[in-house]
Image 1: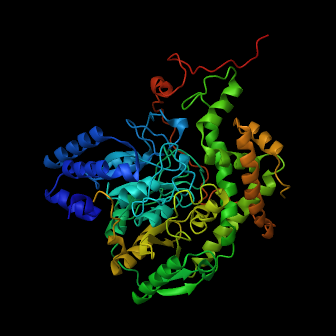
Image 2 (image 1 turned 180 degrees about the vertical axis):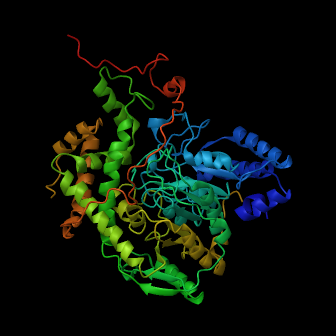
Image 3 (image 1 turned 45 degrees about the horizontal axis):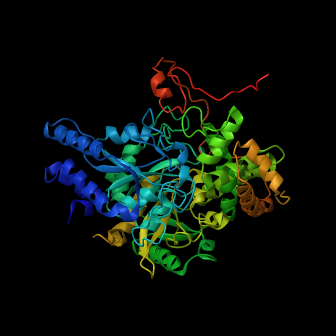
Length: 489
Length: 99
């Protein structure tokens, strides 16, 4: 087994025993990026020198017996929407093509404090808006399992980088499913924490009441390890919650006695791909065999999540993206002679189609005469969606569902039909609107050999339970050990 | 709540959003945004009488911190990404018309 095949747990053990060094692991990852990323396109920026220098420093610390962090020496890739000093942060937008953040995000600081080695920045849909990674202004990311297919989005680069074994760990952000759906499409584990669990300081804002940073790894324990590093209070994010961070990694292997899993029967009706349907039903059988009970529940307002999300998120985006004015940072159209035409030209030229579409939609929903009918109405239904979850969780510990209605779709298949693309987010949006945590774990392969993800949701701040429930499935199956076979393997 | 969206509506919203759009973009957005708005009309099925809007899923109020003076971003760093600066200020094009 090579270093890039190894799980987070194995790598940490090998590093600790001295069987390998951070320099060796980092070199192996960089070599893998060299050989595979021309096909996959997971990275926008690779910081080769910086990563190797840092790996040497961590090796030195370890050799000298200095205290080292919980990720000491492990390479990590960071979605290019999280600020990193010394590296660009482009958000996959022309608008921020030359942007070099003057400070580190809270999540970046935590990675560095844990002695992780940041190897580079991963591709995404521009400003995290999209479900396919096709909205990157730079290049498309391809699904390692089938290069003609999408890796999902918007954290498609972070999911593909782990799936193609270029890095053992990565971080993404999830506003409407942007960690869970790419994790499902790429056959890796991805977790969206509770809103407020991880600091959003230095995460370039898309929709502030929905955005959360979270981890990717090839297995649940890897995700638990990284979440433990990322989670925790940061007073620079006023929505970050000051709550204790459980030892996720220590408890992840403890099965939950009498686990009660809620299932919404309507989730298995129209529009669900038969292979996904089969995989999720098989997953429920695995849980039953492990002693869990499956309970039918109702989420009566779940059919409205797409409509609510695509009003709330664009409305927040239209405000957040007002900062790109060609003055303080970012692209400026040079030909405009006056200030307001300069704003409009810079934004018209600097943003791509999907970003413009969402800014337009949000501006419309917030504009005079439409605010009550669209934005306020959506927020009221949002409360009903949250109440549905509260009611359901009175009877069950976790809710199981598909992550996406289909396995990874073809590149180009949905990109010209925004509404169809939005409707593919049906299973993931509810967790963001309600603020609850969710995880996607590998739960099967389609007849075409594409990964299928199982989504589990839990109550706010119950990531520990979510991880333990996910690990129960993982320990009874081998889907998480399946890897994409790449051209240059 | 939706009348169908016109090209003029889209152009007016683009002005509010400070987005310069080409005539082709206005055409495409008129059709695409119209479809999306038609879709979100399903929210009208839901009775939301007496339902409070939910703006944040985990409500937090009055977060206080100690009033301690800490360094701000140095000027050089704050200006480092500016499209046009003299090292002290952000430069912008003319704001007022010439007399």
